Amino acid sequence: MADTSQFPVRYRFAEADGVRVFYREAGDPQKPVLLLLHGFPSSSHQFRALIPHLAESFHLIAPDLPGFGFTDVPDERRYVYSFDALAQTLAAFVDALELTRYAMYVFDYGAPTGLRLALRYPERVSGFVSQNGNAYLEGLGDAWAPVRAYWDNPTQENRQRLADAMLNLEGTRWQYLHGVKEPETVAPEGYYLDTLLMERPGNKDIQLDLFLDYANNLKRYPEFQHFFRTVQPPALIIWGEHDPFFIPPGAHAYKRDNPNAVVELLDTGHFALETHAPWIAKRIKEVLG
Image (cartoon, rainbow, N blue to C red):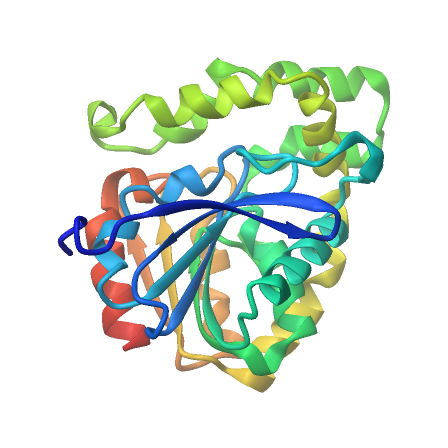
């Protein structure tokens, strides 16, 4: 593990797309950039255990997407929450930081957001890590059933049913602990912080809007897969195999379009960094170089 006193984490804001984007930064700016893209319902906070292990080897940039963490979207911005919008803000963010070459670590929502960025700037992508970041239909597990019901029939009743199931402490804790062999090794502050931030006025509606828009990601999967076939960046596909949302067939599918991708399953759940951060960091360094 790197000496964290030598590579302290900086907590910064950048103005991008009319949004005040919060991000964590660590490592030597002369090192290769690794862009860390979080998922639902978390933020860059999910990378807190990974960053110290990688700060010696990479220049790490971990933004909070709009609607998550400490990123501030002014009311006057009239932001419409969709994955296209998140990707537009992310593109403005990397441009504001003048990032012209980077590897990407994508997880959960970070996958459709980051892959839109990759389609926009394919020449910038030096490597790709997907940790339970899906891009294939076969990767969608049974846990998507209530979301699919909302896609098929976006009534207020289905919207409320989804909110009751997922947008609370019980639902968030379940996402963190499901499939974890030793739940007592998972620090509770992750799911408590996520829940606290979700309770901000209007945030649950933001999350429900993104649940509904997620259906549009499935329509973009062929484009994402074309990116893997044509660019074929060095890729590590490392997956918590007990994830109920994104299941192992979605990990193996990456090799269909990028035969050189390294696919590895871990004995854990959706939030694999909560239990396997040192190992994932080791594999990133080995595969990305």
